[in-house]
Image (cartoon, protein in one colour):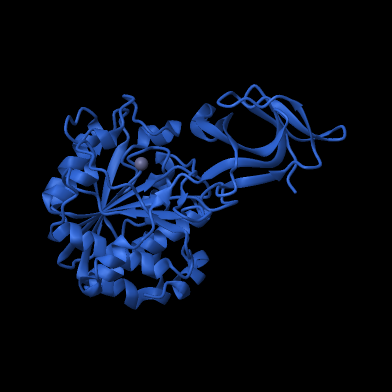
Length: 391
Ligand SMILES: [Zn+2]
């Protein structure tokens, strides 16, 4: 399908209460309450710290589609995209589109599976567990709830919404991966069965629908079997399971462009399922999607003299949640030194006319300044950014 007319109107249905990645459960509850007349709502359990997990149901079609987001508390684009979807589905300009989806499918939405993690802006829940590695042992309250909801619904399709690291690019390119997909394996041999094939075919439709917006900027996530993960187990249970990973776009620090693309991917998937058009799609359209590759740095400095050699330096930061879970703190490390011309970065500095003060040491915290005369252009102290001049 051609997503352009819908994405061009995105600003008319975007959920404006969500503006960055740091919203909390109370914000979600406030938004969901606006949809009480169009979406059935049920509290299906509580997080460790007592926050409600709310399942929404829309439509009355025979195909059951279950979307869940934010098992990892700091991966928020899927939740934002689901909130945009709720607005879209009652937008008068797209009523016929919504009717097609809601008469073919019953949608079950479980946004923010990990509200305690969202509160802190951490991947893990309040028990410090990774919910997406807890399918088998189900020690975490949230894993128990997600398993039970899935078992009750027994969905035909499942959309598992995550965000990947902003250092993934698309293999053999210098493009960042804005969105990645995977039809998770259900066994060590990455075998195929009907529902995994269906997941691949729907993904191929999603990818084709976003090609105009993201040429060369979508990838396939690693399909190594993970017996502890939800997607792999849901796939094994007979739900055609689709992993969508929000990725990164240059300059899109708060992932608002990525959010729009994840919304587009979800919508294209629902359209493909509603129309059954995915059934005719060759599997090669899935297997030909390029793989993800770690080709990005947060910063690259080219033409810099290190130990008497003109070379390039790659620097990444490790984000950690700031106080109140409403920002991230960044700790910068020298990740690579050498020929980095096949790599790209969120920010690139050319140092040929700059002077280096301090030293650059591989695998050590960034602790140097690049100077133009007496003015620092880029400066770090013990891993912490001090100043940066944007050109
Ligand atoms: Zn995740």
